[in-house]
Length: 587
Ligand code: PEP
Ligand code: MG
Picture (cartoon, rainbow, N blue to C red):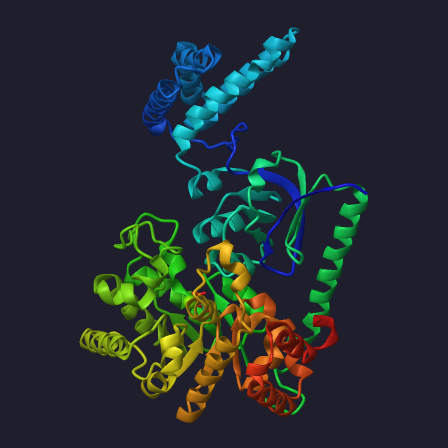
């Protein structure tokens, strides 16, 4: 059996994918799918082409100027050849002719011209001349890049990605949505941590992904078959049929397990000793409600509204937001939907609203989420109005992310009251008793959970950020991912404090961070008193299966003992004790 292990990273889900590689950051020929244009667009398309050729020339001239005087003369000759090809009138004339006569976009016309030229070179007898087809490809690529812009979401939209494994240096959460729509099988990135929004989104979309595989783009050929094994965090290339067969079998076993779990879809989420547990879904876009319902969610525990602001140049107005919320609220039927107010920040940016944060500051600690919204009420107000108006359509809860101070909370509550009054005077309907909750994801808020619990209707623990801020590890920085530890004694104590603060105040406490959707922590959290879990929808049935075979009263005793002895355990023995609580199949 032979294969190359191309890299080891961090798997973001318990999944496996096979498929041809699509390398985002390399100089191979750029392929674009056909795009027709209207006859009225022809002149503008020709101008686009001419501008792109001019830009490609400028870029090559800049490269030529930077060639050191000591470098071999052949390097300058090589670039001169490409510059001459760019100046060649037949390149422009033929492409313009194709745009006019075939009504196709500039990049498509250029691709047709390139393919014709490449065919001519390929038919040449002389091996040297045949190899010069690469010059044509380089020059056309240079123009294509100028036409399509930098490697970005816009490129991803154009490429044919169906069934392919995208390999890139890094991806934004906004890219992941486009990738999923383009039918990608999986992705691998050189950078990023498993709790980054990019990775979370991939999990939510059931897209296998491995992040943090350093330098992988250097060692790959476009189109070669890859195995993406998220369970072990490895990417394999050049796998033999035996290895591929082994992985196909594992994919079948995974699908069989999912099919078996469907049997408990309509069974209640109740423990062996009769404790009912609310299992809710985390969603990013209205389309996710189909998966949430298909996996038996009893409501939405976290609707990450910021995704409505991404992949577009302008901000959504109140009506557009209301439409999106209406789809979710009506789509979920009469079960509760928790709409979280905007959590924009450095890793979730809206093109229509550049962050005011200057580059050198520490963005995770800066203007993010509720801080940004309070600083920019003109951004926040339309959303508050839309959420309140959505509350007239069904049971809606409003949730505030990243609270850290009581003054901040007072400001938000005041703004909500003002918004209610404005809606009332305009005769617009809303639920006057809409529950308002807060995310506990900053250690200060966890330590002061009692104060927040007195002023709010519910709390939800955001462990992704709580772990980031408590352990001082940037969730997007793969260099410190090894420190990410939901079982760190500090984290367990903070979670416990928040649950107890809610119990004392008689308000519900949920958890919507990734920890809630990991079945290996379900029994631990049940024993700590958690009764509401919100997670990516595909994790719901696995967590429900664990709940249905657990005795909560017994777990409460076990966890009491575990927490009492916390200071005496090292990380390994603590992890073993938590593991020992679990059913064998999760070990
Ligand atoms: C969290 O921080 O745990 C959370 C659920 O919010 P997000 O991942 O969107 O920051
Ligand atoms: Mg968060």
